[in-house]
Image (cartoon, rainbow, N blue to C red):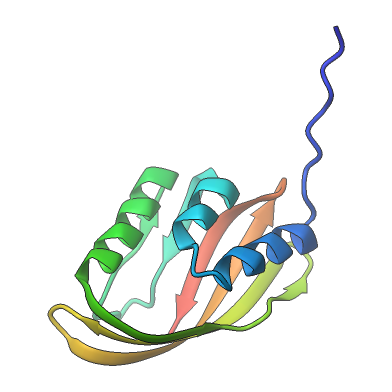
Length: 126
């Protein structure tokens, strides 16, 4: 029996799927579906929120820790991705009340690197 090969998504296809899920605020589905096992997550060195994480489980825990501290989600918006080569970027704006910082407006650029149809790097600039 010949098994069909799974088609590897292009960066454009990965970005489109990311956008589809981001517009629905389905961030953990993005993690489950699009992140590689060896994904890395990088925040600015002076971030009051987070540092860096490596590996799918650690990156997910970083996100879960942030979501767990959100007391109120007032507004969120993610732009359409801009794709070039094996990277894509989106702008994200959030108005949230988060422990212990209170209500904050987070305006960021999120850059993703794709290899073999999976996200291997996310980097945040805010």
